[in-house]
Amino acid sequence: MKKLDSSKLTPEQQNMFNDELAYLATVSKDGTPQVGPKASLIAINDHQLQYLEKTKSTAYQNIKDGSKVAVVAANVPTHKAVRVVGNAEIHENDEFAKAIVENSDTPDAYVVVINVEQVNG
Image (cartoon, rainbow, N blue to C red; front, side, top):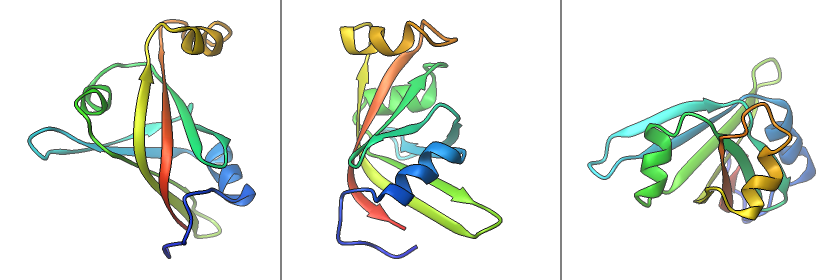
């Protein structure tokens, strides 16, 4: 992946996050890395991603503790991929979260918004 001089996602990159399974990476306070799939992750605009935090486990705690995040989505047959680095904000039971989860299959989920700071793709 090449580094782009941008913190904005192109339409093609947004589509990749919307169409492919994405993986989120975080790190704990003691430096332990954590990576996991986020099937609900989508691009909501050219500078933000969003997913439903359903398990409220390791990644959730790492984000609460201030971890930066990296997210990658790849299309295996075409060998195309995009990775972003950014910071995440968790919406727990606020109006923003309620509006998103009310029609989902996981109404108890929290909503995580990732503010993109760097795009590699």
